[in-house]
Length: 281
Image (cartoon, rainbow, N blue to C red; front, side, top):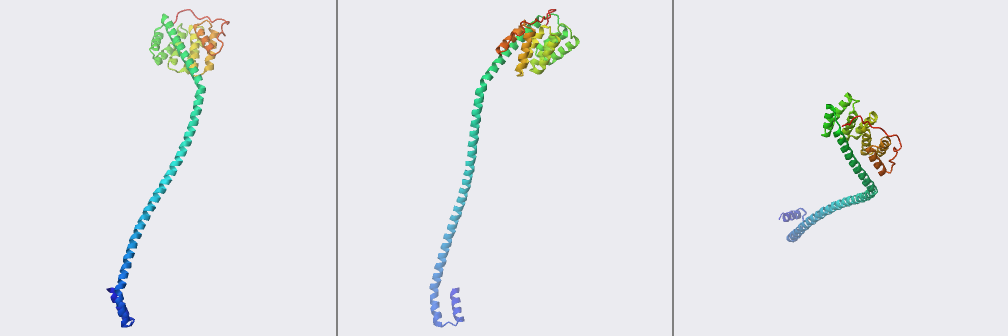
């Protein structure tokens, strides 16, 4: 009704003729109806617009989600490509390793067989030396105690007593034995470098002793255990050359023959005469 009043006032102010104002007044309800209709239409359009905007926002959110998924899928695809490349590289490496193993396999088998033979020789040599020592008579208390500790596997205290014995009795009949078992104590602990030095002590200081040939054989075995095949072979040849009639020389010849080396190098040379002054332990 405010619009109706406003129109009447406007007619009065503009001095519009009364007839014109009366006709305008009769059209006001129709105009108000039209305005209301348009207002309702506008409200409906606004509501539809809001609905459409909501749908657009939803579509935009879905599109963003799809875009993120596409990006994630692209990254995943790149990672898969990298993994495939790595798998291809690993496959190539596996083929190379398989080829390498096929080549070195026979060598490994040969080394294993040699190691088994050396272990058997080691056992036989140790047993033989133990029997010889058991047959020996008259050892001094210090030597006897050291040998007892050695046979019990107490290598450190045994070695200390053997060293003490050698220091006190360097020229005693049992001194070569003490030097040999001192070297054996290192061998028993797989300290092969030190054992090699001590076995050489037997050969250098007591070359005519019954233990000299055994020391050379065990020295060769020590070189073999540290993968020094050339030195092991040279020591075996020295053993055959210096003590050709010793049981250890027979063992050395067999080992040299298995390696394709000559085992008769010392057959025609002057034989070393071992000491027989006294049985030793």
